[in-house]
Length: 410
Image (cartoon, rainbow, N blue to C red; front, top):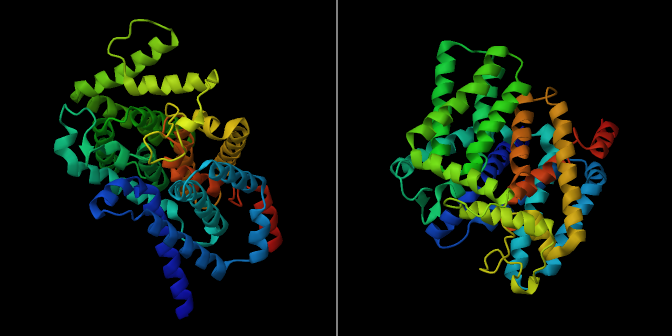
């Protein structure tokens, strides 16, 4: 009896710490500056150890071995090997393993035991709301006109607190839908929470996060919620709150319009761009440089995220991967991403089976992170993408090989 209790306690601890990793890992830089050393490798290795311990206690090694030999996992080994081949020092090797391979492995291990463990998705939801409220600590910075993007410890706040907040508004609406309680009181409480999230996202001024949070909340409210009142509430309430917050801060509007104007001028090849937006130009140039196969020697920019010469390829992963490991490496990554997209779709089609809220949370997280290769700075800066990739392509509910061996096991 005592042993069973310890296993359950370990499952709870592992799920909670994994949710902390998903929601707060972007704070690693700030924590490292405060402590003068990085907590990241120790936290990551602790999660690896806990998951291995749970798999050894609860699992069937024959099933795990068979389920692991899947095309996606073999492609991921190939992709990691190609990245490792390009590094030229031990620190860079550690970066590749810690930012790409081990997060993927964590996702695989959680996928293999997801059906029999406390699910991390509920903890992710709770921690996302907590993170949104935590940003209010910087209230005085958020409402200032300058800098446009408020900072904490010399870095924009949205870089440290913004990750995954774009899905929080829809999850709030969907949680209300699952409770099936659209009373005046519940609508008021949810509206207050949605307004807080809208205020936080608008004032942090990640324009991508503003756009995605509105679009994801509107679209998924319309297609994922059956109750008409809640469907309409989800599709209109949060976008209205974002609009109100933008009206309250004119400079935030201007920054958003600057991005749209720069994109339009770049696409139409206009020579006159009024106050061009630098970050938008970097992304657009990175995209077109990759599209037209601009040749730059990789000797100029070694594969090291800490190096000032690390080639960001205009915040466009496909260009960065092509730059470092060539066309074959790019093909491998595209195939991995295709597996990811197909399995998100399968999970979406099966979302009403099992724990519906947990499945929807995982779907929303995956969709949000699937967009990261288009605008996040680089493959070595986004371990949660690889964690979710490992998780989705190995879930028994989406993986045909996993379903086969799960059936044999039953």
